Length: 221
Image 1 (tube, rainbow, N blue to C red):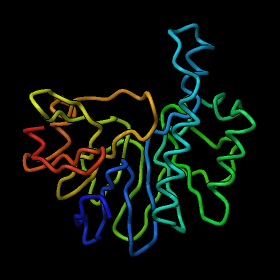
Image 2: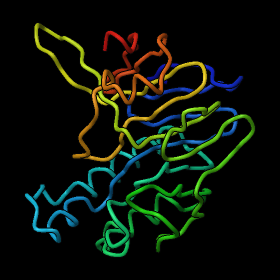
Image 3: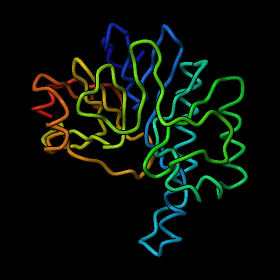
C-alpha cells in the first residue's frame, strides 16, 4: 500500500499518498476538507471563479481510494462542503456519485467551520467522534492526545530536479496527526507556519502526498 505506516496512541495507521488516512484494524478510511461546492460558493459570492469541476474531481479521487481500500467506514473530518448551501446545491450527477460512494458503508460527517450542524446528505453528523484511543475532530486542540484532525490544509515543500515543489502533507507526532486537505483547489498552509509549529512537537514529521508518500522531518519540509 502506497503510504507511510505509523503508530498513534498504540494504533497502527497508514498515511496514504492520496491524502487519506487508513486504519486497517478497524477498516476505517478518513479524509479531511473535501470542500465540495467551492467553485459554486465563490460564484455566489461574486469572487474570482474556479473551474467548475472541483467537486467532480474530488469525488472521483475519493472513489479511487475507496476502490483500493474498500473500507467499511468513512470519516470525513469537517469542511466536507464549502458551506451549507453547497451541500444542498450538489448537481444531480455529483449527488448520485456521492450516494454510490456511501452505499454499503457507514459514513460519518464531522462538523467543520464551513459546514457546522447536520446537512442534507445521508450519513451520520457529529461534532467529533472517539473510537478507542483515537479522537476524530475538525480542528486540533492544544492538549490533544490520539487526535486526528484537519482544518489547516498543511503543505510542505520538497526540491525535485532543482525545483521547489509544494505538496499537501500529513503532519504527525507522538500525540496527533493533522491531515492534508483532500479537496481540489483547497490551497494550504506551510508546515513552517507558527500556528502549526505551536501544535506539533519539534520531532514531528511531514508525509508529503503525491505519486508516492515522502516522509521528511517537519522542520525541513
